[in-house]
Image (cartoon, rainbow, N blue to C red; front, top):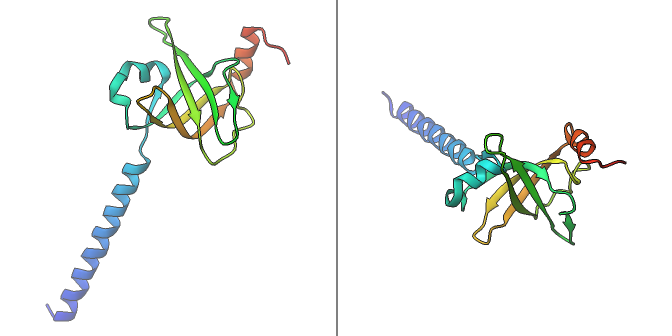
Length: 142
C-alpha cells in the first residue's frame, strides 16, 4: 500500500474508534434501571450510587413545594405480599413539574438514591391515565 493509503486507513480507524468510545460512554451515562418502589426496596444497599428510574403513586398530602425543589413520597403495593413500600423523593430538576403531578398520580422519577434515605430526582414524569381511577377509589372529588 502507498503511504497515502496507510494514512487514510489509520485516520479512519482512529475516527471510528473515537465514535464508538463516545457512543459507549454516552450510553453508560444515560442508562437507568427501571423499577417499582417495591422492587427498589428489595434491592436494598445495591441501589446506592446507581442511576435509577423508579415508579410509584404519589402519596396524598406528601407534596411540599419549596423554592428550587419539591419533596414528596411515592408508594407501591407489592401484588404478591400486599405490602406497601414508600420512598421519599426530593425533585431538584431544572424542568418545571408536569401539570399532572398531584396526589394519587403515578410518577416516574429518575435520579440517584443517597445514603440519607432520600431519592434525589433530576427528572420526573407523571402519568395521568390511572390517576382519576385512584382518586375515585380514594373518594376524592374535584
